[in-house]
Length: 397
Image 1 (cartoon, helix red, strand yellow):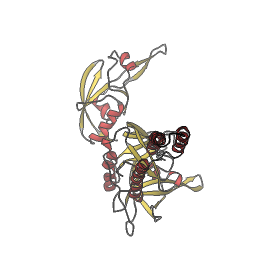
Image 2: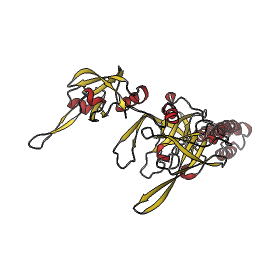
Image 3: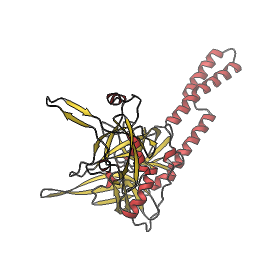
Image 4: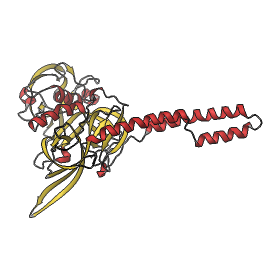
């Protein structure tokens, strides 16, 4: 579903920066060598510089930039695969199939391939196409709806498998140059370039099971302006060293096509979950059993708290879940006899195990990355303006 585009902005800016210098140099040379006709020569030289702004020095810089991108592509593209997925469905007495495409990448030499869960969900057959045109079938090894990650496997016999190298997604910064490689609209081996435009986003993934109303939130999402389109899902987002820092997973667009906002699951989450999917076929996520929102200044004032109070306002609890059993209070609406609605605010989570929590994304990230099922964490809460601490034993989601 994703695709990244880098639009060669770096090269374009380099050329523009060189234009002014090139024109000035040409005009200065013209003035020194021709005095009688300097005006005409300078005008002619300026026109020539405008038409041919690339000096030898600029051309060398551009060649170096191009070489970097070419090397990244030649190094990473053999690890990226195109996935052709067929889903069989039945409707009444009719049986049919739905076909789709996505991306994936080679995880190891044993034939494990990583992709998004939504790419292969409900697949009756999965065909893997490698960059050299080799085609083979794959089977599902493990899936995880909550992180939107999945592992499939091909028979490695006779295949030239090129596993990716993972980078440090925790050291990524806004403004970093990044590159995406995938198969948008089935266009295999497409490479695009951009920058990291934001960090610490959260991405909501719904369980497409029609009998479930579950929604999961993935923390630490990388936002980028790389062009991503349907078919990019499960592909790679790499840094300028060719290391995978994320798995392209979703776009924000009113047209289901690139609008300059795309999201990638960070490598540190991938590296935590994929080995478990390979070993056990599933991953157990720790859960507090609650939902919340980032406390705003308006809500804080309504609760008679200082407007600069930070934390997570608890908005719902899973009945019988960890937070509910521990006695965490939820925000509720009460109705008077006249039908007037009154909001009774619940607890505000300000820290977990002493780590400050300022936003809902902070809370999700802490539990997702630093806690385990069965672990007891201590929540610091504001209840009716007073600070209290409650131990909560995490359960499996």
